[in-house]
Image 1 (cartoon, helix red, strand yellow):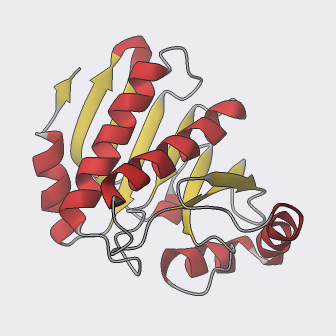
Image 2 (cartoon, one colour):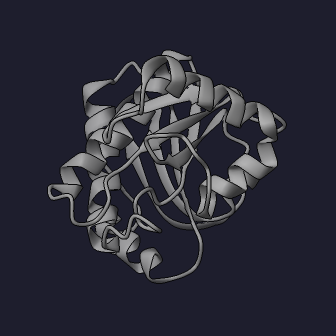
Length: 189
């Protein structure tokens, strides 16, 4: 897959985690994660970019989900169709906002929920952005720890998962170094 590799981790049963500098919308994964709010309204940041690229079907399906099931709580994730995007679906993951407290554990739960939604659909690959690090303002060191911890815990708890490749896609900036430090370069579990 394209992008500039930051670091890679290997897990038993062919699980792999890559952190890359790359545009999430240009990924060739089965699905992508949208850093969503509980109402699945895509007003800014990466969520707005995903919504614009997907077209109105993604917003309509999200609105219907919220109407039927209520707001998506922090730590949970739901899936919609991808609209015009080339993916099998979009996982909308609701991460914590800075100041809520217990942000790292909440973010780990959020990412784990997103990974499980992809597994439930039989997807082999899932790419995700730096959930909660943008407008939700969770510090990047907390985010980096949470992403790596969530991936490690997921592959440990689900060794037979359909998911073989998880990719964290970020843009250049301070988060790159935080992720590189947390992943410790390329290594195996």
